[in-house]
Length: 165
Image (cartoon, rainbow, N blue to C red; front, side):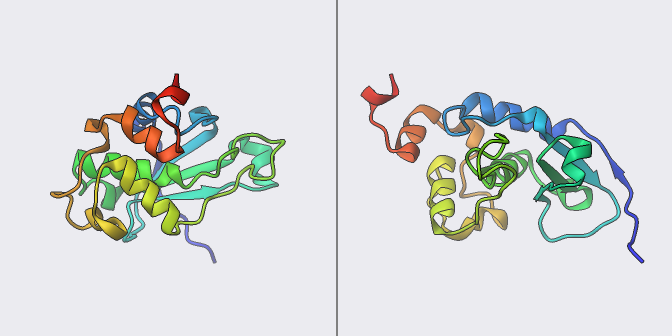
């Protein structure tokens, strides 16, 4: 029998998502925060504080949101604000480009966390720490909310200053 977990809804992650989108809007083109459900799971232990879940048919027909961010409250509450920002950033990077467009093949899909995604994450986050070492020790990593986004976005999407205008 499936175990029933206690849950709650909280705006903290949604607020972080909106701040990230405001700062890095070009990188997350087509991202629709209203189509992401955020749920805090209370009595479940996980080593990661947040995970991205794709919602598929028939559940999508009911909720009309292709993604759920499941936040594990016990792990989440132990994080600093910098770590929370980085975890949310890393998690929403996992949404495939076009993931909110029902007409695209990538609708509701997730990106695989491969070398390219880690490289993009480190470039945008301003960290030179490989393999997301900031998860264990965030003292050497830069808070993504303190990064000069204009230069890093140009590098990440491969455009020059002229092309950005």
